[in-house]
Image (cartoon, rainbow over all chains, first blue to last red; front, side, top):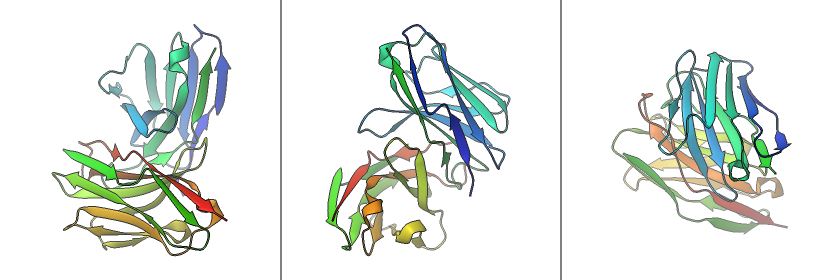
Length: 117
Length: 115
């Protein structure tokens, strides 16, 4: 099956640091990649949708200057949390699809646990 | 517009007994429906999907779900629960045949399996 690799799996860093999370589709070319944030005991909150070679589409309330998304190729998208603060601590999950979103399932990475001290 | 309601936030069953996780949806369009499972500190794994073909969908690990348009439901079932089924389950709806819409996730159901 389709595999999405997300790295790192866990990050602990000081407040003010910028953190980059990578999401790679290993065995398929992703039409679209999604970035989610998940709070404890909660569902996934879509942060942004990214397509290769174009600017990401951010959901309402998500600061694009805070959460920088780069989708440089059909197999790689990165999320950079700039100048992270404790309130940015969360579980971040990426997913990727090949083809039309409505017909195809999303393939999820294993998530990144971000802890800002 | 579309929405998903997972009717139970927690379900507890004994090992070997049937599992029923309920999901109702609403959609202005022909929907695609998915069930995903999430184990602690992991991403989501696809269990099964409905995309306008057979209304009874079989998935991995013995799970299946039936799309009932008249009831706007897509409940997930398994005849016999296993300890390894304990996890969080998400029902997801999206619009068929389009990239215009986004997926809408239910709030999740936590399945506990007692020995």
